[in-house]
Amino acid sequence: MGQILNYISYKIVNLFILMQKRSMIHKIKKYPNIDKSVILGLNVELIGPELAFIIGKRTYINDAILSTGIESTITIGKNCAIGYRVSIKAVTHNIKNPCPDENGNVASFEKDIVIGDYCWIGDNVFIREGVTLGKNVVVGANTVVTKSFPNNVIIAGVPAKIISGMNA
Image 1 (cartoon, rainbow, N blue to C red):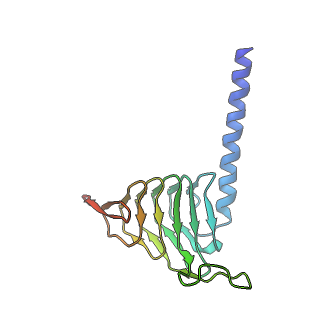
Image 2: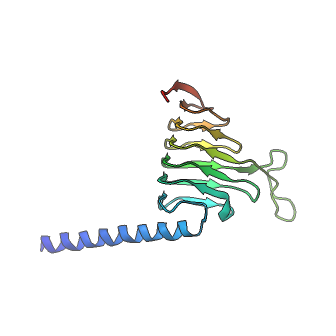
Image 3: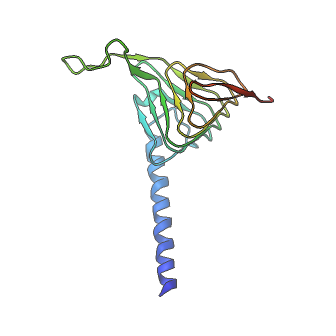
């Protein structure tokens, strides 16, 4: 009896994995600027126009919210690793008027975000509008990135600062 239950459990898990892969492939097909080799975790949310997300080959995103407006883009290079509970937002509320007006419209501020190739972004990171990260940047867990950084650095903190350089 135990072997039968193990076999059924194995089949159910494999079916679940297959459904996850198909769901991810279906999600990526809607976005023409996301390479087919990209891996998106089940809870990844892409909020904004489909053309506004540009993601390079072999990048994976575990669990994140990427948000753009109608005039901004998020570009993530190739071979990037993005952790859990990451927030990358190219659009935010207007600081002078963050609430909806009488018509329900919210004033917003947008600026592109660019993340270079071979970046590693740890868990619980927030990257705000207008930030550019160079190639080979490591962002430590729980970091708030409010400004741009050059190639080959390790950044961490609130707000982020360079804590180490890396050999190119």
